[in-house]
Image (cartoon, rainbow, N blue to C red; front, side, top):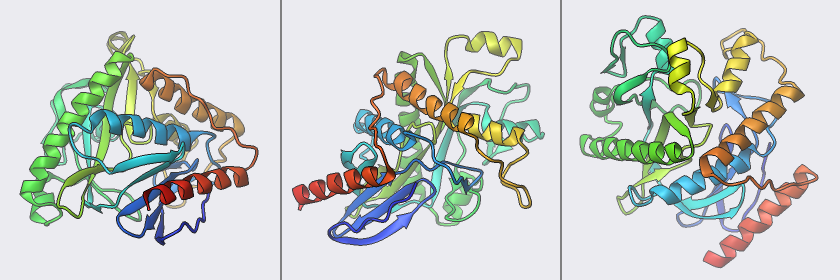
Length: 315
Protein backbone atom coordinates (compact mmCIF):
# COMPACT_ATOMS: atom_id res chain seq x y z
CA UNK A 1 0.00 0.00 0.00
CA UNK A 2 2.87 2.41 0.67
CA UNK A 3 6.52 2.78 -0.25
CA UNK A 4 9.24 5.05 1.16
CA UNK A 5 12.48 4.06 -0.52
CA UNK A 6 15.80 5.88 -0.70
CA UNK A 7 17.47 4.38 -3.77
CA UNK A 8 21.06 5.19 -4.81
CA UNK A 9 21.08 8.38 -6.87
CA UNK A 10 17.46 9.18 -6.00
CA UNK A 11 16.46 12.78 -6.75
CA UNK A 12 12.72 12.85 -6.04
CA UNK A 13 9.59 10.75 -5.62
CA UNK A 14 6.05 11.17 -6.91
CA UNK A 15 3.22 9.40 -5.06
CA UNK A 16 0.35 8.77 -7.44
CA UNK A 17 -3.00 7.11 -6.89
CA UNK A 18 -1.65 3.60 -7.31
CA UNK A 19 1.96 4.12 -8.48
CA UNK A 20 4.98 5.51 -6.69
CA UNK A 21 7.56 6.89 -9.12
CA UNK A 22 11.17 7.46 -8.07
CA UNK A 23 13.39 9.75 -10.17
CA UNK A 24 17.02 8.64 -10.32
CA UNK A 25 19.99 10.71 -11.45
CA UNK A 26 20.17 10.84 -15.21
CA UNK A 27 17.05 9.91 -17.12
CA UNK A 28 15.85 6.87 -15.16
CA UNK A 29 12.52 6.35 -13.43
CA UNK A 30 11.64 3.52 -11.04
CA UNK A 31 7.88 2.94 -11.00
CA UNK A 32 6.51 0.77 -8.20
CA UNK A 33 2.98 -0.45 -8.92
CA UNK A 34 1.32 -0.86 -5.52
CA UNK A 35 -1.75 -2.84 -4.50
CA UNK A 36 -3.71 0.38 -3.91
CA UNK A 37 -7.00 0.77 -5.74
CA UNK A 38 -8.73 3.98 -6.74
CA UNK A 39 -12.11 4.85 -8.20
CA UNK A 40 -13.81 8.19 -8.82
CA UNK A 41 -10.40 9.79 -8.15
CA UNK A 42 -10.34 8.47 -4.57
CA UNK A 43 -7.80 6.00 -3.18
CA UNK A 44 -9.37 3.39 -0.94
CA UNK A 45 -7.84 2.44 2.43
CA UNK A 46 -7.51 -1.28 1.67
CA UNK A 47 -5.42 -2.82 -1.07
CA UNK A 48 -6.16 -5.64 -3.52
CA UNK A 49 -3.86 -8.67 -3.24
CA UNK A 50 -1.58 -9.11 -6.30
CA UNK A 51 -3.10 -6.12 -8.12
CA UNK A 52 0.27 -4.38 -8.50
CA UNK A 53 1.94 -7.48 -9.88
CA UNK A 54 -0.92 -8.10 -12.32
CA UNK A 55 -0.90 -4.54 -13.63
CA UNK A 56 2.86 -4.37 -13.99
CA UNK A 57 3.22 -7.71 -15.75
CA UNK A 58 0.35 -7.08 -18.18
CA UNK A 59 1.77 -3.67 -19.04
CA UNK A 60 5.21 -5.20 -19.55
CA UNK A 61 3.91 -7.74 -22.04
CA UNK A 62 1.97 -5.16 -24.05
CA UNK A 63 4.85 -2.70 -24.09
CA UNK A 64 7.02 -5.48 -25.54
CA UNK A 65 4.34 -6.42 -28.09
CA UNK A 66 3.82 -2.86 -29.34
CA UNK A 67 7.39 -1.49 -29.39
CA UNK A 68 7.42 -1.76 -33.19
CA UNK A 69 4.55 0.77 -33.38
CA UNK A 70 5.91 3.47 -31.09
CA UNK A 71 8.99 3.62 -28.82
CA UNK A 72 8.13 3.22 -25.15
CA UNK A 73 9.68 4.22 -21.87
CA UNK A 74 10.43 0.73 -20.48
CA UNK A 75 14.04 -0.35 -19.90
CA UNK A 76 13.52 -3.39 -17.65
CA UNK A 77 11.30 -4.94 -14.97
CA UNK A 78 13.63 -5.60 -12.02
CA UNK A 79 10.74 -6.85 -9.84
CA UNK A 80 7.23 -8.18 -10.60
CA UNK A 81 5.83 -4.92 -9.18
CA UNK A 82 8.42 -2.56 -10.69
CA UNK A 83 9.20 -1.09 -14.09
CA UNK A 84 12.39 0.87 -14.72
CA UNK A 85 12.26 3.25 -17.64
CA UNK A 86 13.25 6.50 -19.29
CA UNK A 87 12.03 9.77 -17.84
CA UNK A 88 9.99 11.72 -20.39
CA UNK A 89 8.18 15.05 -20.34
CA UNK A 90 4.54 13.87 -20.34
CA UNK A 91 1.90 15.44 -22.53
CA UNK A 92 -0.86 16.90 -20.29
CA UNK A 93 -3.58 14.78 -21.90
CA UNK A 94 -4.68 11.17 -22.02
CA UNK A 95 -5.60 9.64 -25.36
CA UNK A 96 -8.78 7.69 -24.66
CA UNK A 97 -9.99 5.51 -27.52
CA UNK A 98 -13.34 3.73 -27.63
CA UNK A 99 -14.46 0.90 -29.85
CA UNK A 100 -17.80 0.47 -28.07
CA UNK A 101 -20.39 2.68 -26.37
CA UNK A 102 -19.62 1.88 -22.74
CA UNK A 103 -18.70 3.49 -19.44
CA UNK A 104 -18.42 7.28 -19.46
CA UNK A 105 -19.40 7.56 -23.12
CA UNK A 106 -22.60 5.59 -22.45
CA UNK A 107 -23.46 7.72 -19.43
CA UNK A 108 -23.09 10.84 -21.60
CA UNK A 109 -25.11 9.22 -24.40
CA UNK A 110 -27.88 8.13 -22.02
CA UNK A 111 -28.10 11.73 -20.79
CA UNK A 112 -28.96 12.77 -24.33
CA UNK A 113 -25.58 13.93 -25.62
CA UNK A 114 -24.59 12.95 -29.14
CA UNK A 115 -21.20 14.64 -29.11
CA UNK A 116 -18.23 13.75 -26.92
CA UNK A 117 -14.89 15.57 -27.11
CA UNK A 118 -16.03 17.11 -30.38
CA UNK A 119 -16.70 13.67 -31.87
CA UNK A 120 -20.27 12.81 -32.98
CA UNK A 121 -21.93 9.60 -31.82
CA UNK A 122 -24.61 7.99 -34.04
CA UNK A 123 -28.27 7.97 -32.98
CA UNK A 124 -30.02 4.72 -32.12
CA UNK A 125 -27.19 3.03 -30.25
CA UNK A 126 -27.57 0.84 -27.15
CA UNK A 127 -25.13 0.44 -24.30
CA UNK A 128 -22.11 -1.64 -25.37
CA UNK A 129 -22.89 -1.38 -29.09
CA UNK A 130 -19.84 -1.23 -31.34
CA UNK A 131 -19.04 2.13 -32.95
CA UNK A 132 -18.78 2.07 -36.76
CA UNK A 133 -15.13 2.99 -36.27
CA UNK A 134 -13.20 3.59 -33.01
CA UNK A 135 -13.37 7.16 -31.70
CA UNK A 136 -10.69 9.11 -29.80
CA UNK A 137 -12.06 11.06 -26.83
CA UNK A 138 -9.14 12.75 -25.06
CA UNK A 139 -9.16 13.98 -21.48
CA UNK A 140 -7.06 16.40 -19.53
CA UNK A 141 -4.63 14.85 -17.06
CA UNK A 142 -5.30 16.40 -13.69
CA UNK A 143 -3.01 15.96 -10.69
CA UNK A 144 -5.92 16.62 -8.35
CA UNK A 145 -9.59 16.06 -9.15
CA UNK A 146 -11.36 14.65 -12.17
CA UNK A 147 -9.88 14.47 -15.65
CA UNK A 148 -12.09 16.43 -18.04
CA UNK A 149 -13.18 15.70 -21.60
CA UNK A 150 -11.45 17.89 -24.16
CA UNK A 151 -11.58 18.10 -27.95
CA UNK A 152 -8.72 17.92 -30.43
CA UNK A 153 -9.36 21.53 -31.40
CA UNK A 154 -9.15 22.69 -27.76
CA UNK A 155 -5.95 20.72 -27.16
CA UNK A 156 -4.22 22.40 -30.09
CA UNK A 157 -5.67 25.89 -29.56
CA UNK A 158 -4.67 25.86 -25.87
CA UNK A 159 -1.16 24.81 -26.81
CA UNK A 160 -1.31 21.59 -24.78
CA UNK A 161 0.05 19.66 -27.76
CA UNK A 162 1.27 20.98 -31.10
CA UNK A 163 -0.77 20.10 -34.18
CA UNK A 164 2.17 18.12 -35.55
CA UNK A 165 2.63 16.08 -32.36
CA UNK A 166 -1.10 15.52 -31.96
CA UNK A 167 -1.27 14.01 -35.44
CA UNK A 168 1.39 11.52 -34.35
CA UNK A 169 -0.44 10.77 -31.08
CA UNK A 170 -3.63 10.02 -33.02
CA UNK A 171 -1.79 7.76 -35.46
CA UNK A 172 -0.11 5.83 -32.64
CA UNK A 173 -3.37 5.57 -30.68
CA UNK A 174 -5.27 4.01 -33.58
CA UNK A 175 -2.41 1.60 -34.28
CA UNK A 176 -1.99 0.57 -30.63
CA UNK A 177 -5.72 -0.01 -30.28
CA UNK A 178 -5.76 -2.14 -33.43
CA UNK A 179 -2.84 -4.23 -32.09
CA UNK A 180 -4.50 -4.57 -28.68
CA UNK A 181 -7.75 -5.60 -30.35
CA UNK A 182 -5.95 -8.33 -32.33
CA UNK A 183 -4.15 -9.70 -29.27
CA UNK A 184 -7.33 -9.68 -27.19
CA UNK A 185 -9.30 -11.44 -29.94
CA UNK A 186 -6.78 -14.30 -30.02
CA UNK A 187 -7.56 -14.90 -26.34
CA UNK A 188 -11.34 -14.64 -26.70
CA UNK A 189 -11.66 -11.05 -25.50
CA UNK A 190 -12.89 -7.75 -26.93
CA UNK A 191 -10.85 -4.62 -26.16
CA UNK A 192 -13.71 -2.18 -25.55
CA UNK A 193 -11.88 1.01 -24.67
CA UNK A 194 -8.56 2.09 -23.23
CA UNK A 195 -6.28 5.05 -22.71
CA UNK A 196 -2.71 5.76 -23.72
CA UNK A 197 -0.31 8.30 -22.28
CA UNK A 198 2.65 9.73 -24.14
CA UNK A 199 5.70 11.81 -23.35
CA UNK A 200 8.67 13.30 -25.15
CA UNK A 201 12.17 12.01 -24.39
CA UNK A 202 15.10 14.43 -24.22
CA UNK A 203 16.02 13.47 -27.79
CA UNK A 204 12.67 14.81 -28.99
CA UNK A 205 11.28 11.31 -29.56
CA UNK A 206 7.62 10.69 -28.68
CA UNK A 207 7.35 7.70 -26.34
CA UNK A 208 4.48 5.65 -24.96
CA UNK A 209 4.64 5.95 -21.16
CA UNK A 210 2.92 4.50 -18.08
CA UNK A 211 0.78 1.36 -18.38
CA UNK A 212 -0.99 -0.14 -21.38
CA UNK A 213 -3.98 -2.49 -21.77
CA UNK A 214 -4.34 -3.21 -18.05
CA UNK A 215 -7.69 -3.55 -16.23
CA UNK A 216 -7.05 -0.14 -14.66
CA UNK A 217 -6.71 1.58 -18.02
CA UNK A 218 -8.89 -0.63 -20.22
CA UNK A 219 -12.20 -2.42 -20.46
CA UNK A 220 -12.51 -5.93 -21.90
CA UNK A 221 -15.59 -8.02 -22.78
CA UNK A 222 -15.67 -11.74 -23.34
CA UNK A 223 -16.17 -12.28 -27.07
CA UNK A 224 -18.17 -15.46 -26.56
CA UNK A 225 -21.80 -14.54 -26.06
CA UNK A 226 -21.33 -10.84 -26.85
CA UNK A 227 -23.81 -10.77 -29.74
CA UNK A 228 -26.39 -12.82 -27.85
CA UNK A 229 -26.20 -10.56 -24.79
CA UNK A 230 -26.53 -7.44 -26.93
CA UNK A 231 -29.55 -8.85 -28.75
CA UNK A 232 -31.20 -9.75 -25.46
CA UNK A 233 -30.35 -6.44 -23.80
CA UNK A 234 -28.26 -8.15 -21.14
CA UNK A 235 -25.12 -6.77 -19.46
CA UNK A 236 -21.86 -7.88 -21.01
CA UNK A 237 -19.49 -10.18 -19.13
CA UNK A 238 -16.46 -7.99 -18.65
CA UNK A 239 -13.03 -7.91 -17.14
CA UNK A 240 -12.10 -4.45 -15.87
CA UNK A 241 -12.14 -2.22 -12.84
CA UNK A 242 -15.71 -1.27 -13.80
CA UNK A 243 -16.87 -4.07 -11.50
CA UNK A 244 -15.53 -2.08 -8.55
CA UNK A 245 -17.10 1.17 -9.78
CA UNK A 246 -20.46 -0.56 -10.22
CA UNK A 247 -20.24 -2.00 -6.69
CA UNK A 248 -19.53 1.48 -5.31
CA UNK A 249 -22.43 3.04 -7.23
CA UNK A 250 -24.76 0.28 -6.03
CA UNK A 251 -23.71 1.24 -2.50
CA UNK A 252 -24.50 4.91 -3.09
CA UNK A 253 -21.00 6.21 -3.76
CA UNK A 254 -19.76 8.09 -6.83
CA UNK A 255 -17.04 10.19 -5.21
CA UNK A 256 -19.31 13.22 -4.91
CA UNK A 257 -19.03 15.73 -2.11
CA UNK A 258 -20.87 14.63 1.02
CA UNK A 259 -21.01 10.95 0.05
CA UNK A 260 -19.60 8.45 2.53
CA UNK A 261 -17.13 5.91 1.17
CA UNK A 262 -18.60 2.44 1.79
CA UNK A 263 -16.56 -0.18 3.60
CA UNK A 264 -14.86 -2.47 1.11
CA UNK A 265 -15.48 -5.89 2.60
CA UNK A 266 -13.20 -8.92 2.53
CA UNK A 267 -15.52 -10.62 0.03
CA UNK A 268 -15.38 -7.66 -2.36
CA UNK A 269 -11.59 -7.45 -2.06
CA UNK A 270 -11.24 -11.17 -2.82
CA UNK A 271 -13.58 -10.88 -5.81
CA UNK A 272 -11.67 -7.91 -7.26
CA UNK A 273 -8.37 -9.75 -6.80
CA UNK A 274 -9.80 -12.76 -8.64
CA UNK A 275 -10.96 -10.47 -11.47
CA UNK A 276 -7.48 -9.01 -11.89
CA UNK A 277 -5.87 -12.46 -11.93
CA UNK A 278 -8.53 -13.76 -14.34
CA UNK A 279 -7.82 -10.95 -16.77
CA UNK A 280 -4.08 -11.56 -16.57
CA UNK A 281 -4.53 -15.23 -17.44
CA UNK A 282 -7.14 -14.52 -20.11
CA UNK A 283 -5.28 -11.76 -21.93
CA UNK A 284 -1.79 -13.32 -21.70
CA UNK A 285 -2.81 -16.96 -22.06
CA UNK A 286 -0.44 -17.75 -19.18
CA UNK A 287 -0.93 -18.92 -15.63
CA UNK A 288 -0.50 -16.17 -13.06
CA UNK A 289 2.31 -16.90 -10.64
CA UNK A 290 1.84 -14.71 -7.57
CA UNK A 291 4.86 -13.52 -5.64
CA UNK A 292 3.75 -14.53 -2.14
CA UNK A 293 5.02 -12.60 0.84
CA UNK A 294 4.31 -13.01 4.53
CA UNK A 295 4.40 -9.32 5.38
CA UNK A 296 4.45 -5.91 3.76
CA UNK A 297 7.99 -5.47 5.06
CA UNK A 298 9.15 -8.56 3.19
CA UNK A 299 7.65 -7.26 -0.05
CA UNK A 300 9.31 -3.88 0.41
CA UNK A 301 12.66 -5.51 1.18
CA UNK A 302 12.44 -7.67 -1.95
CA UNK A 303 11.56 -4.69 -4.15
CA UNK A 304 14.36 -2.56 -2.67
CA UNK A 305 17.00 -5.22 -3.23
CA UNK A 306 15.86 -5.95 -6.79
CA UNK A 307 15.89 -2.27 -7.72
CA UNK A 308 19.34 -1.69 -6.17
CA UNK A 309 20.69 -4.68 -8.12
CA UNK A 310 19.26 -3.17 -11.33
CA UNK A 311 20.72 0.26 -10.61
CA UNK A 312 24.14 -1.26 -9.89
CA UNK A 313 23.97 -3.11 -13.18
CA UNK A 314 23.19 -0.03 -15.28
CA UNK A 315 25.48 2.36 -13.38
